[in-house]
Length: 567
Image (tube, rainbow, N blue to C red):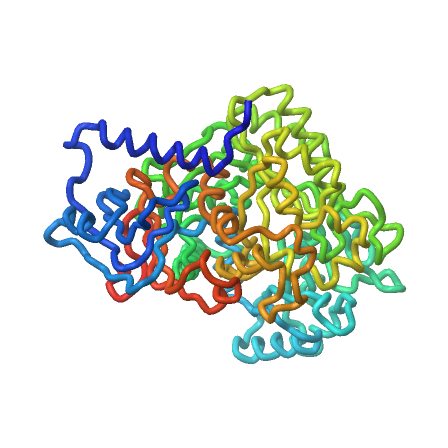
């Protein structure tokens, strides 16, 4: 029997939802729309787009009531309904970022931004400026540096920070969050010395005399972060609000939040209940013992309005490629004798998979290198074979470098590959040197995975990358930098077409969060999460995406942008 495609399943779900809405007692359904969007083109993202193309959407009670022509939509309008002309724009489902860090984004927005630094001196200059603007004795934190972007592709040294910050503690996270650069004062406060051993799954880089250089890899980063005072609750709320508002401006209506503590999850529940979360969140609990214990006791949970789901757990198998922490099956091409880091013990991974997975939680495991992905797929095959769940939808987060022999295993095991197109375009300039030509056959292999029938979903891993989903669509279609290089794209055989890219950023993300009957398509009965663009994201050339703008964002029927915004 032929397995139905994810798009076909989404279409079927839409039809079933529409039928259910039609059959319900009319008293339970809003009979009038409070928001009408018209004057453009509607991309429903169903497997087959309606003909003629719809031009209007009617929204009421937080759901889509009607998709069709302007007259039909306006006929449903309540007297006080907002009727908005999108002026030739395109109405699409809200973007779903299927792997990101919401609090991390809010924190990054309030810190020193080191993205785009062309040299180590440029990074140091930004720290000097921040220290002058924010005088005092407190910590200076930042994020976004990448030594691979500098002319001398070497890790920096703590003394560079000491020269501009003096005795003030500084901690600057690498762009991927899997390494950090600390000042001497920061190391001293954390008690990190030449005698400090490398923690399991991490490393402290040292000079020829054995002294820490200030660069910490993977699990070693927590040695210093543990010394930073925790923000109070008002500051956490502020950062979450900053992140949500930033997402909404860019058309992101749902975020799969990869790794939240029990306490952060409870705060999100409060915000969701008060209508202040802003974006929908499919949260993955972190792997801390206290979090796992509390999550097990509470069980999987989703709010009635779908704004927050707490039904997944996030694990780590390896580190990141940029810091050579990703676990490879063979040595790094540019560092013989080194294969990366297995940051979590396999027995612990197996225990969490059995225990949380057995309790109905979705298991989502970070794996970047081909060795990390092999480890996770082996464990998934073992544990899923024991549990035999009906609809697990376990995920591999990133799945960047795959041994070609492992590519068919995703579809065979029913495992979702949660991937980030912008990681490909960020890494491609140095990936050849780091991995070698042979391993690149399984690098960012979107098309190869899709051809096997595997489920994929797209995101950005923000704040590792920028939030902008339109840039993600461009990367997925071209595998080029925004300036059009390399000409023809890097390993272009793995690029996807325009409609597939958009589907993976919308309906694909809904599927990965068990929300395919609620989100990801524009159809009656679905939750009204919509985005209006001032251009066509599938009909034009890919480069047009880079100049396209979001003119309105709707979450659950609530207008978050535009001249008539609720907020």
